[in-house]
Length: 290
Figure (cartoon, one colour):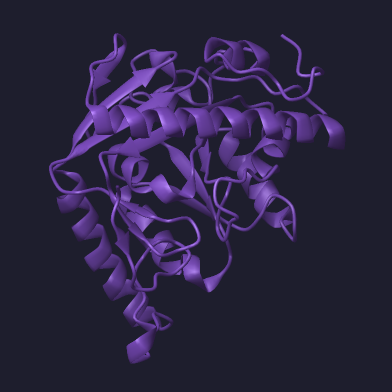
């Protein structure tokens, strides 16, 4: 079983020593801790053995035939794997305006991600405008259960965004071989050095334009079901270490194509029903038609 790290951590998964009264609130402390965290992530995550199975390899921004922006979604607890592997790939990350996200903001920027602060719903009109501008020339990534949970409960913002901006969603499940876990709301996963890290990535999924509230909820349920399934399967794969037919080794890599091709027309994506069926899942709502 995965070990639990019992010391308190901030909602973004970085340790916080409240017992000593240490709070990273000043520009100097945020900057210093961000530098330390970035260096530690690069060294620590560089020891892992990475394997990924793609439903369509062309959704990977480093693939030579990558075209068109995507919205990449994964659970907050597994942020270290994409943060390490796909920096400098023309991807912007949506983060909360809360002060607890300040360190992650700095770390993600140093790792090569663009940052948008805000929400797609509550008080998020400015963020939505910025996301629309970024989406015209880049991909986006969202942890749809962040920044405060509940754990593995998908918020509807990514579906709303995909429907509004006309961008397909790519669902990514990640897992590590018996990671240590912090005592945070998301049970933040810290992989053991030199252990296995595995990912299962969906095809691009089309979300219909101008979905009403019921339509957004139907797609929210379907995406949540798929993300949970892929995450559980990736964790099982990491523990067992068995070979999967479509697996490929991946490494930390900067994109050579995404900066010029994200603005080009890309694959509009498959239907959510088709992608669910590919994994033996059924839509909770029959209106999510193939």
